[in-house]
Length: 497
Image 1: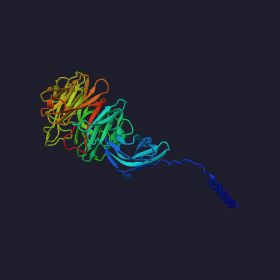
Image 2: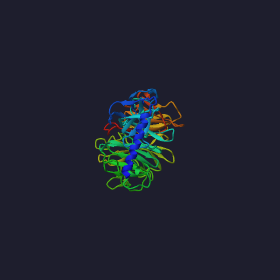
Image 3: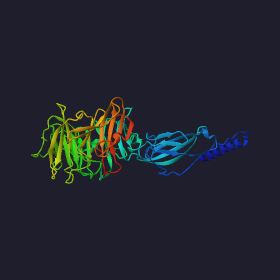
Image 4: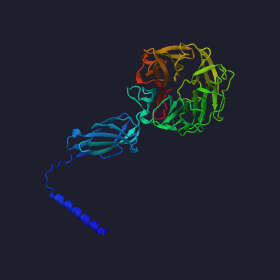
């Protein structure tokens, strides 16, 4: 009975509807809805494959039967793994023709175009695939402060060309960089593309070659240290010898796998400050006891350097001094061996904390590679003891140092310094010097404000600068904290130190 009632009701309603349609003979203007048509290439993940900082340009094929000037365009850039509402989804243009400079992390994206007729709210959309590749695979990494209080890593891609990749860190991460003090790029045959370590006042980050975040410093250790205060990580060319100095303690690992994981603190009563790390050899200056030590990997502890009858100074006690520089006079990747023991000269500059005088300590090697203390003498060069930056040359017995707005070349064999360059401005501080043997880099920060510049000089065989001036200069940085050179793959040639 119920089914019968429902059938009657359906027929009655249908009849009413039909009658209404039949009787309604009024006149109406029935305007068809304007049609939007989008055409173009079919979607592919590789519709566009571009490098960071390149411009993504798309001219959509749009047909509209109405007034096309009224159409509204929205271009969205969507990471391939993004979910609805993800903050990584961003609107990149409201114009019909897209022109967007790519400043996003490397990876796969979808470019989504939405075309809307506001009069009818009619929507049409089309998608394109975008693959973003790394821009700064090689270059000078400039860690500097920005005006908003954060920091970033800008990259001088080629120091003979003007282009600078601004914001390599922020383009590849979703958080801000703060309190960073220095950078270290670690590459070896075991990890040809390398990893970038960012040291902070209380910690740091490991970054991928693309500058994306990989891990925090707690992942650097087998066991958590008392504090995270790293200042150097070293890996030799083959990846077999690795050292980390953290909070005055030396750690090592013999594993070549990356990311590196370091062992417990090398035992001993010491506070490592400046260090000389060369392949299987690790020497440090012990600021606690004012002495030089060497690391015994087999024993896992710091040990005294072998003393010899011909030693010119007491390596166990040089007095109340702070170490300014501990380095050698060859390429930073050089390890001592039978072929170079006579030319490889570890040099340490130490400043007396009471008198302010500075002394140069030169080490040597026997063929057995047992270290001996070759010589010590006072440095009398103008401004050396109060210099703001030092670096040993890697092709001659010179040390470059910066005093006020001047750069000097110091011949430590003869205790003679000569002026090689004067900057025009006097209200500057030269805070870093680097060299690869044929060039020298100088970081120049303003004493007031938040400005930094990087200068490059060509070095002649004598140690002077070609033409007496720089060959390239890069400005518009904030205060520069550190510069590090990043190779595309592991380098077997001239490296920067």
